[in-house]
Image (cartoon, rainbow over all chains, first blue to last red; front, top):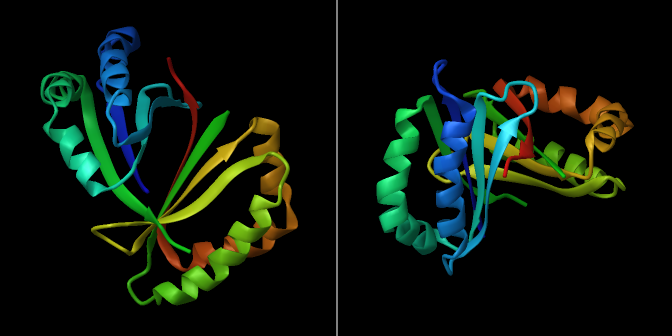
Length: 95
Length: 95
């Protein structure tokens, strides 16, 4: 199992609800994917302009399929326009 | 349920195994805590000097108890000495 943490910071003039409205569709579509274990949008408790997707995937192939999906290709660029920064890490567990 | 992502970057001269040996004890002790749902150490697939704890907690009280525990108070400062940077975010899900 792999985890992805995609941490974003909204631009100062962006309304949170505008961002959430677009992000919700991405969450719904992604959770339908076979290789997706979990894909959940979060906000930082102290700074709600930090919006972070915490994701669980069966393997790297599932992530590649996700990245090539039509919902990612249409929705992700829209979300990115509303963020001033984005930091994505792909993780595996270490024992 | 709350999630914490604690992302660290090891100092250049630190041996990964040295870090893991100390971190394993923290993982074992923390997973015994009643309010801990999940507490898993990860490494970034592209940059193994990035070591990140991804945590799930029942509530904020559980996190406070964790932060006050003897294993956190003794082990976390040891781990911090081996990292050049640390970034901690506390998240709640947004729907």
